[in-house]
Image 1: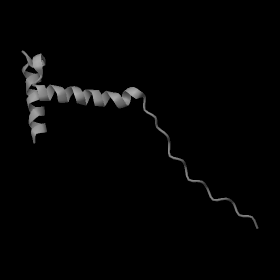
Image 2: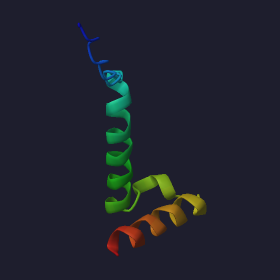
Image 3: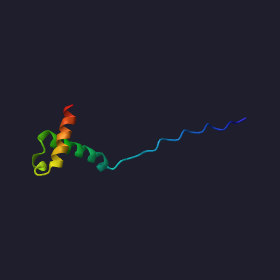
Length: 63
């Protein structure tokens, strides 16, 4: 008496990200890290909110 084959497990879906979806967060992190470690340069001149964000970022990274 033949038996029916066991059902196959569903294959995991393959998700491929475009190249920019992997690169963009790395670039943003690098830019923010550079701004935080160099003091922001002229980006914070005359803009207190940018300076406050950078100050908070520095404090967070310092521990």
